[in-house]
Amino acid sequence: MAVEVKVPKDIKEYKEKVIAGMNLKQLLCLCVAAGVNILLSLVFIAWLKVPMEITSWLMILSSVPIVSFGWFKRNGLTFEVYIRHFFKYHFSAGVRKKQTIQTKVEETNKDIGGQGT
Image (tube, rainbow, N blue to C red; front, side):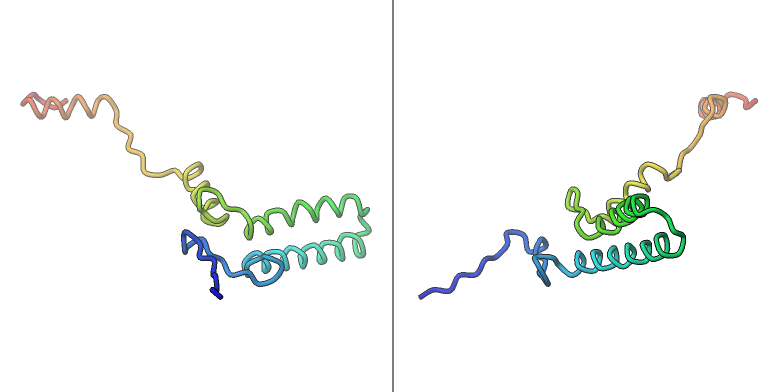
């Protein structure tokens, strides 16, 4: 009688499952989202007397990014790494050199032995 063990093709892809097929990161994100939703419901429904319809939409909108931290994966990148690269690429000023035509003309004049203006 042989014992068989499944070995993933890529060892980096292996994540230990804690409860209900979720790894620890996913479970923590789900618990944080549940806590935020409970806090929102207490504040908006009990204290501010906001209708349940509006509060439920606020709860959904607030929990989607929190839960995304646990499950989202694109091109092998986790959510936080992907968001960091996204903002760095789209919103970072970066290093840009601005050269005017006049400075290029001055450089070529110096190279050929002409007088600078």
